[in-house]
Amino acid sequence: MKTFFIILAVLIVLAFIMIYVQNSRTPVLGHSQGRLKPLSSKPNAVSTQADDVAKRVAPWPFKADQEATMAAILTAVKSYGGAEVIKQEADYLYVVFTTDLMKFHDDAEFYLDADAREVHFRSSSRAGYSDRGLNRQRHEKLTTLYQQIQD
Image 1 (cartoon, one colour):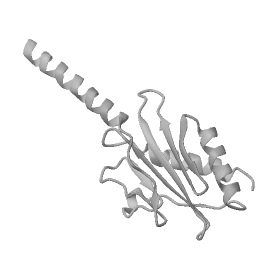
Image 2: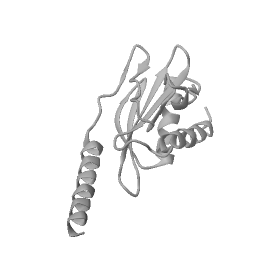
Image 3: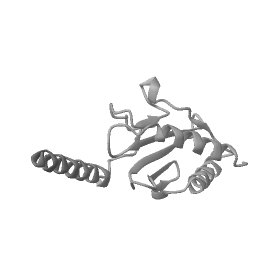
Image 4: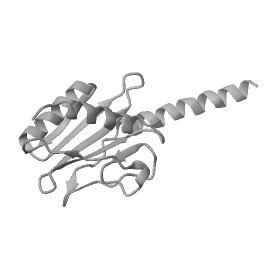
């Protein structure tokens, strides 16, 4: 019985190490030719450009112009809380959200498609397999916050 508990403890420690390593790796993100990076096969992400319908979320309409749209996104992100802006360009925003309890990092991107006048969104958890719907819930909450901002 003692051996069982030793093995169990080692497995638990290894699992935490694996999660820590996954959580600390910064992915290579960005956009190319109007497309954000594709999602992995894991169910812990959503995107407006996802091929998988189960992972797809709706894009946002532009505000008055690109500058007002970026300002509204930043306001929504700040209101949501728990985010650090990593990269900001005229048509792109990359932020990392950190969960309160376990300090997991979720990478979120916003691409402003000026031609279509839409904001594309991608949010993905770094660690683990499932996010229990957190990235979809984050999109829904950010959508509400964004919609409340006047042009």
